[in-house]
Image (cartoon, rainbow, N blue to C red; front, side):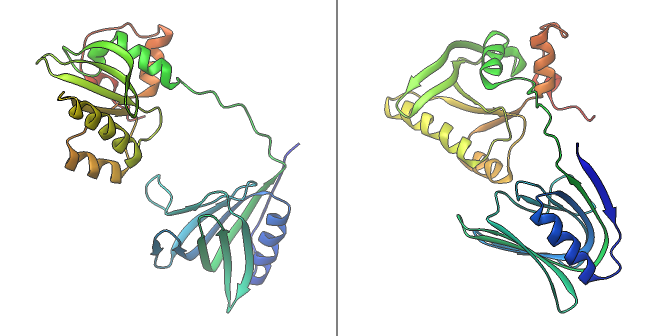
Length: 261
């Protein structure tokens, strides 16, 4: 059974001792502290002092959140080592990753609380819908993406791979659609551009569309400069449609945009 604990360290040294002990035990650790984040590796970044919530998982990954927004300020997946020490009156946590070489350093001048869970139990994770289900659902209900769209082929082979969906829009333009079940990055845009180039070499002009729940900033920038259209979908909405809790209907993509809740 999991064991939960919490302490409010009376000093930086005590905080370092507690966190170091918990890291060695591979506990799930949450630290509320005032600190500076410094990252060096494939890029570099640094924050000014501020209140943060630091999460260290049993797997060794480290995530740092600020008080606003839902995205972490910094994160370090699959660390090779985590070093905890007291240096010049600061609690210093270094998360080191060897390949690629990355170091996330947290320098905390105040620690509010340290909480932890030892031997946490991993529950099952159930995915709303997989990529093949999304593909097949959109192939039979293409108006979810836009009115007048007709899908003529699923998994059409092209030289670099397979186009998820292929068809025509209501203006008669050929359309190639790449689907991603998770947030799509710049590699997804490049993948789709590879398909576009394969068609271009054959003298065929196509309209490229990338469909995903969300997109990274780099993906949006490349899409804007390369002519790739981005369309967001709500996985929960598609799941409800697939499960029969929502009736298939004609409509626009807005009907399946992510909900505010």
